[in-house]
Image (cartoon, rainbow, N blue to C red; front, side, top):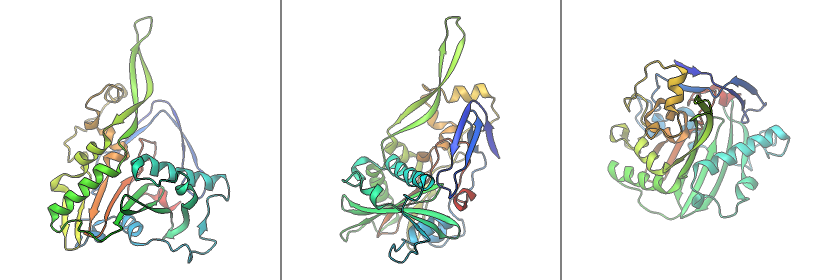
Amino acid sequence: MILKLIKGIIMVLSTFRMKLIVIVFIVSSIFVQVKAQSVLRSYAKTIGEAMPERIFRLYRYWPDTAAISKNQQISGKENPRIAMINKDSIEWIEKVLDPNWLPKDKKYIKDNLVIVRKEFNDVNVTCVQWDRNGYNVKVSQTASIISIKFIPLKSQSLGKTTQEKTEYAKLLAKQIFADNGIRKGIRFSKNIQGETVKTPVMVPVQNLKVKIINFSFHPELVRQFDDGVIGEAASIQDEGVNLKSVDGNEVDYENREDNANWDMTRYSWGYWWRNVCWWNDGKSVGFFALKRESGPIAIDYWSKLDEM
């Protein structure tokens, strides 16, 4: 079930689709999936089997640009709508990664991003890779998912035991993610008549690296396989968040800009940093997350949005 609360006018541009879709909603709707489906498959025997299929595909197959047909590969300059796909992918890379892990050449991503139409099934994918800080960094995205893979440029151990592999991934997470984000909030103030006034504001969210470690490395959510370890972010249920029905005023109050406990409200799951999953197979480390920003479209790892 999805909780839909309406408060203003939002225009959502689905820029990753092969056609531009504009959806207008009355307010900053906040969608929260109450019954969260587990990201990892329960019957899995390997890391690959544990991942959602799209994530496995994004990590498993890297497009050979020389082999991609002209009809399938898109430069990003064909028309304004494709340019928006290009721009959206670049913005998400810059949003998620720490600047010290981006290419030194600021134009590199824009010049080297590859857009592949229907890379697998009907899913469109953007890809780009570069070397930084001793790793080859590969980033693949769909409309709703961003996945990042780190491969050491020199042979080195990424851990042998479950604990060692988990700690290695955790230490890498402390380095590679952006430390600042933005959420939607409400500012409460009084007008000259003494009446309460609610104003939508963008609220800075700091210390994302620490938050991601706290959200995504719960020991009970780490699974071990013969080929490595994989962990998923804690769900609303895992964190024991109260999911009682609320009205618009309660939603506004929980999303107030000075709510020090906002991380433990249901609304924090509407943002990418609350949804980071990871894996370590001893040869490389990967992170993946839903491209959530509390928008009016509920997305997950099985979203039809990727196939449009």
